[in-house]
Image 1 (cartoon, one colour):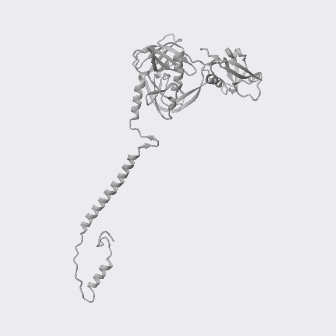
Image 2 (cartoon, one colour):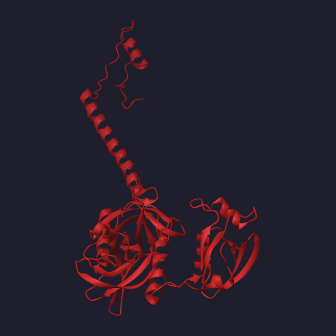
Image 3 (cartoon, one colour):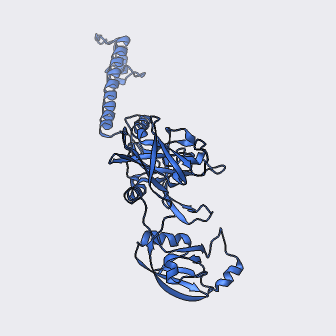
Length: 414
């Protein structure tokens, strides 16, 4: 049955109504009394349908939207696993920069070989970070290569004031140096963060003195949290050390060295140290992690130097693809064919000379640990020994396997 008893929506005549029509016109001539029935007009039905439809739609809409609202209230908005931020991310950069900026200084290195102190080149400019105040002095972290060869050091604060700086201590291996200045008027000291908690893709800012344009700010992301890159301590093209660094695409240029790499909490998580600037290379800047920096800086501030074990050998790698030994040099060593890696002694001084090591000895082990290069030799000495230790050295002399024990001394200042 339809919504209405009179089958308004049906185009067919009902069987009941058809029979009634036949009866009224039958042969008997009997007429049924006409029943008076008052029905609804078409316009009335249309109005009723419209009202019912509208009410139904409203009820359904309320039910659906009420369910959606309930679900939204229970589930916070997320993008993947990252919660939606309620603040402006660029405002965080502004706030972080404001916190650290007063603690970042420009450093001017008047080198000894400059006859006129007023003539500066790019290498004489750098940056530094004030990280503590003690006993009327403010202490500044920078890179060793920023202050190397200094005849006179000056620091320019964020407000443009120039102050004389004193070198407290420097370390070539870690490329860290500490300076001190008069603490009068110094109000801001940088907060040091935990670089071990850095995340890939985290936003960072670099503050420093690129090309003498002090108080410069750039931003980027952490491209890699723990990158190990080879370095040549003597700048002779032979990699003899490895530096663990934070890689970033924040713009770092000449003069940024020693400046601050800062997270969005306004904490220093690295000291900018270098960039790769070959043709076709872009966005490869590096900073020494703050955790490594502080270990070195604290020892430099306390002792003025880093005490490391010293063996006393000048060497070349037996198997170096960049500086290979000539064939006649290899023949002089008279090594067994099984020996492929090691360190060839060029000169022995200090403890090594006392122990009897000589020219053309080939060192292959320290305390049963394989030594394959000058880099591995230095890393073992610095990371696994201390001053006064006795070190067992395995080496070949004219093809004969030998061992000797060396007592390590403190590395002399260069």
